[in-house]
Image (tube, rainbow, N blue to C red):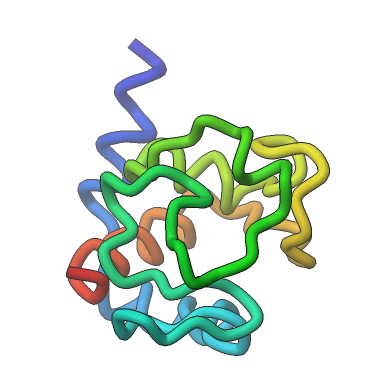
Length: 113
């Protein structure tokens, strides 16, 4: 039953608050297709395999992670990127607040289509 709670929290995230949280990500990630920066474009991220964009140089850790980006896997990754994919190059310590992650994911679900 506890596995369902994070999903419910993500479904209830506030996209407007999530847009503000995305500012932490925007220094490295863009939302437009093909707009890679320090990090890969997040356009179309949901349902995509980690390390799949041909025009971005991913770390070996991300390429071999086997992660398919869903709200659940993104939640785990944003919480602690090094625990989710040990050895990845993303210089981000993680977002501790589950409600902040829910808000961010709600925004990304709208903004990355």
